[in-house]
Image 1 (cartoon, helix red, strand yellow):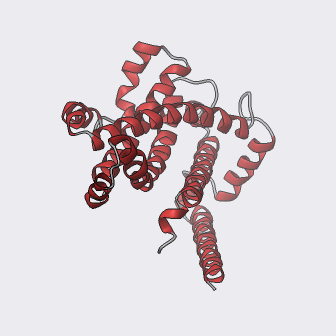
Image 2: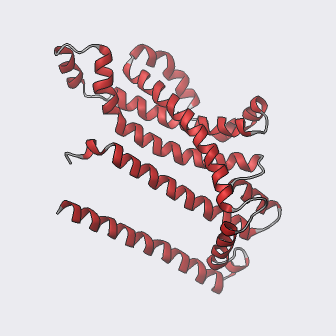
Image 3: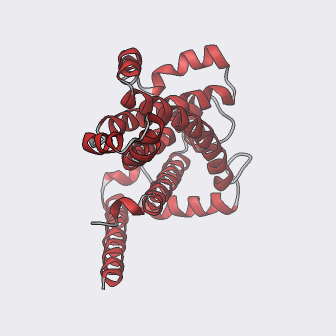
Length: 263
């Protein structure tokens, strides 16, 4: 019965989502055909045709799929490094009041600075190569994951910790048996935000200096006054971002199934 209800909810969500996208495309098409909007941007039919041509053909030296692969490779490199360090620092700050007093002020200063503001420094430190882009993605991931890991570790039920101490558990056992598992749901929430932020950041970095990637597609279209290529790049970015968000949600649903088993 529960499985049937879940499938029904998924089907309903899919139908409403498809209807929403379809309605948007219809409105876009009608407006470009009947108003002056058509003189500013092409219709969705032209953009979608360009997208399919780019997938099976080339935009510059690569297909759109290869441009997406280049962008994703940069994202994954910075995301993994930033998330690993962010989880570590956040858990340490949430677990140790001394570590929190030392590291939290510096983190609170760094966190509000958008990754794009670091572009000049990243170029000075790392040049115009891949390292500068990965550094920017690292910052985007680190800030979001650290905050959630910190909050998760700090808000662990103190009664559970007290009970564990009464049963003779040491600090290491308490950390790995109670603090870390209790923080996992919030860590995954931070990972989802970090992935979205990383995806946005790599596109901005590619617009500064790159020879491939979806961000390169947009800036090249701007330089060539090619609005179709610009919109094609934007649509490709949205599709890949949508897929990444769904992958992260499904991964959380699988790995954190134990956290929802009682709901």
